[in-house]
Amino acid sequence: MKFPKAIKRYCPKCNKTTNQKVSQVKSGKKRSSLKKGSLQRGHKRGRGRGYGNMGRWGSKPTKAKRMGAKQGKNVNLKYQCTVCNKSSVATIGRAKKFELKQG
Ligand SMILES: [Zn+2]
Image 1 (cartoon, rainbow, N blue to C red):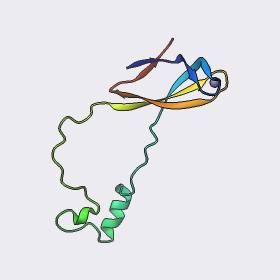
Image 2 (cartoon, rainbow, N blue to C red):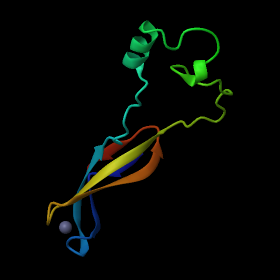
Image 3 (cartoon, protein in one colour):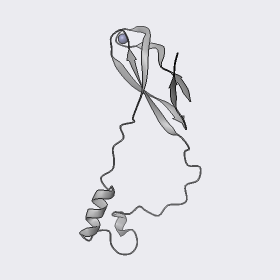
Image 4 (cartoon, helix red, strand yellow):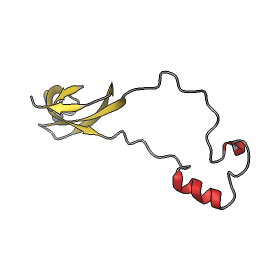
């Protein structure tokens, strides 16, 4: 997907349509508590050892093969108003490739 670097968009602060700069930002999703480090620590301390999924401790539940998994990632864009410098973030949908183009 190609997207212009600057667009005209409504600004709630100015209460009118203004020119706004566009930049890509990360989604801000946080890592879960059971990531590699804490899994290793738990394993050393004797949690998550044995058969089965240990009441789901430290291992993921058995799951059917993911059919039709998503191909792209959600794109988050930051729009910054050139008049008042206020910015807002919006998700524009999924894309495999994303780039900001001139104009
Ligand atoms: Zn504004």
